[in-house]
Image 1 (cartoon, one colour):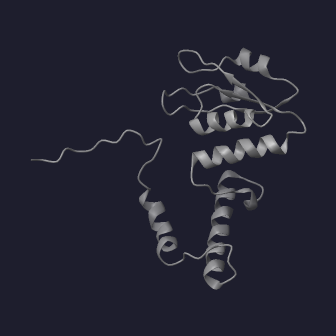
Image 2: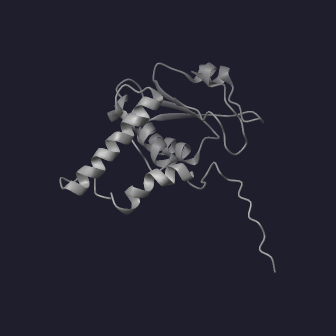
Image 3: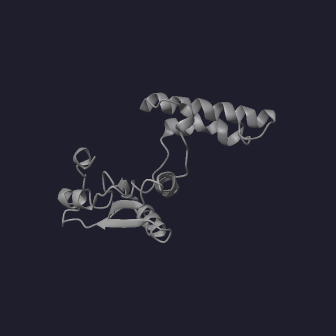
Length: 167
């Protein structure tokens, strides 16, 4: 019996590593594997590689400092860190967060969590195409709003929000 050819259609959630990336990463998975926070030579070698990677990414995105580049394991960790970081950093300026009702679960769950920690969260509804209403967003903005988190491109329904107008 012949084996059926597999077709994978969820590349937004996970996909094979690009062969060029795998080739560059291979030494760090096999021989340069020290803890970058360690003082020994293995750790210092890994630390230099990490700092070089940060510098390359900073240059690529025109960031002012490579120290501002933080590598995370994925969207969930990134979204948690960004939302909680902004919320706690600016809580003296306000406690209102706005997001849409169809965000990535890591955004929705983090915003729900923040609502149990004294933050007011507005979940904007979307139309049948997945777009937020810009007028409704404007109406929700207050002097207490410290963060608006709207997904640019929705990987499930394909909606691309008008980020320039939202900004």
